[in-house]
Image 1 (cartoon, rainbow, N blue to C red):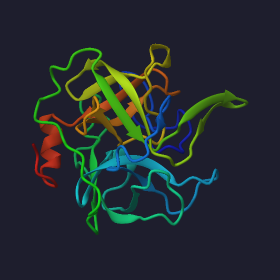
Image 2: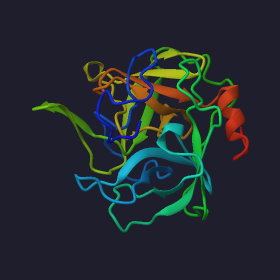
Image 3: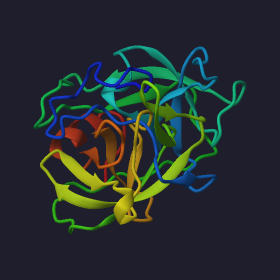
Image 4: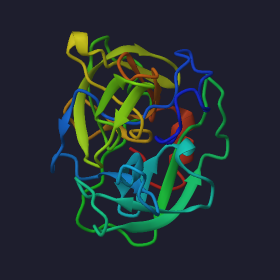
Length: 251
């Protein structure tokens, strides 16, 4: 789900968490220059709060930007930024959105993966790395991950319910592995245990294995108030690799 939709509006509620797609980094810190390959999709006009970004993603080749299928429409022309704190007028790359043709809301495997083929290659940013086939299947409970994205940095509660705060800044945080499923990694983002995680606006963004530059999985969904579980689409599966092979050379 794109970040500005209201809680309960639509999307992947059929997932086991009965949650809405996630979109922001919570209990994190500004990423600065640590993950320059992580960027965001930029709206054509500012939202009511003056912010611009609506989904996250990662450069995986000079002209290929990885994100989530639910972040756009097939063949749509979109805009991408890699600025760590986006402001209107910063460098923008344009490209065409290509989703997995099998994208659906099927819990077992929604094929919620997409790329943006950029019109101009990005020459000054090293692409992030993809995982080897099947390499995530034997990960141990508690394995550390680094989640990065441009989504909401804080969730507050006030009149009218919960409110999600955005600033178009690339943020990062640490979470830990709860479970490995055939298509998913489920990460704890419970602040009570010292974990941070994702929220609205981080959809499509990377969850790096430990402190490495290997993207294990992309952010897809989580609990509605961004405090429990970060549910991420594995990139080492035959399904994900089949889609990606049309755009990049796989490890």
